[in-house]
Image (cartoon, rainbow, N blue to C red; front, side, top):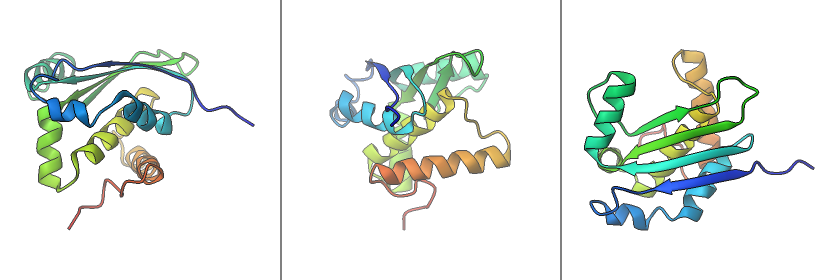
Length: 156
């Protein structure tokens, strides 16, 4: 019998004052459950929930894109042999706006983006079509195992 991957989780919520309702739906145990469902090996991750200004600055600095995006993943492993370590940065106003536009519950959208970011931290990517299809399939399976619908099927 194989053991479940171990998770060392740090959560940071500098956006809590601006988005208290987000913090209320994101207790540590819930975020840890979403991440653990997405792990294939032990990991040490920090999840940080930020406002638009910080999200935009990070995206501009590290990706040369001058806008706030929903999730950024900073993976620190330099080879496949290194332990999984990384930071997931979620921009609260962007996540809230996208959830509303997509007609999805806010918690479901956060779950999907945390699953997505966790897969990135483990080396998954979606730059080419075959990798995107593989990653989306894994995300869909994980989301359904967590009791959520397929995040890539639009709600009607």
